[in-house]
Image 1 (cartoon, rainbow, N blue to C red):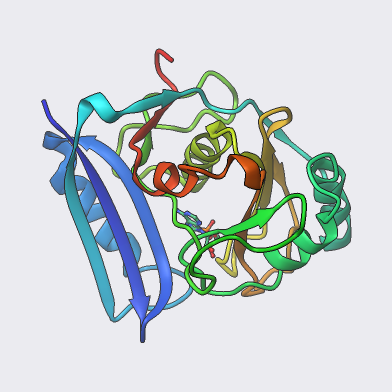
Image 2: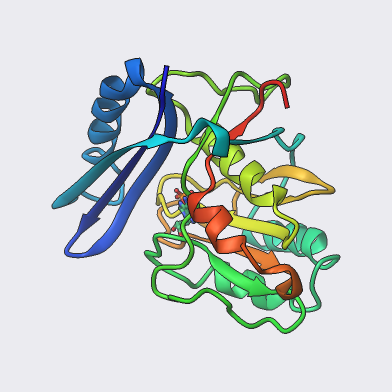
Length: 242
Ligand code: AMP
């Protein structure tokens, strides 16, 4: 049976509100489209005036399979502790760790992520208002650990989505680390991930109610070739018989 990439984008007055990604069997396309539309219209950031749901067939030969990153969780009582914890992980990748933290806590309403040059601290994404959006990805099956929440259902949860994205991103040789803070004002847990430490959930990345939110990919600029195409276009299934 053919597989389809299903993408949702919701915006208000041209400003990004939310998005979602799946790769599903033809039989699941209509349920997933319905679930994504419902979700777009019920986002805590507000009610969109435009929702795009796109369905596109995926070439099965182009699919790359990668494992989930191992999962862990840090304990942080507040934003200051969260900052120190994240910096402790990313200092191994860049001498500009503080600048990377400042970016992830200052960008707003981007559809995608910042590409942060580990060596220089410069931004490398071609469109800084939009960033680079990772698309064409999904989980194959439930992962084998206690944050194993990937189900092939329309209502895939937030942690699984983040773990799928983090696995796709970390798999590319140019990516040294990722830092994410959700832009949902009701959700204060973020994460840091690297190939070595895996995916580490970080509580209290921002105060409850804050509209801060963004993603930074810390990259080795010398290995950048093909990164944006991989992130945006290569279909990746996470988990399963990799
Ligand atoms: P979220 O975890 O969905 O609240 O997203 C947090 C931030 O990550 C957003 O503000 C965007 O800047 C960025 N982001 C969300 N989805 C993606 C994606 N698919 N690819 C790259 N960056 C994303």
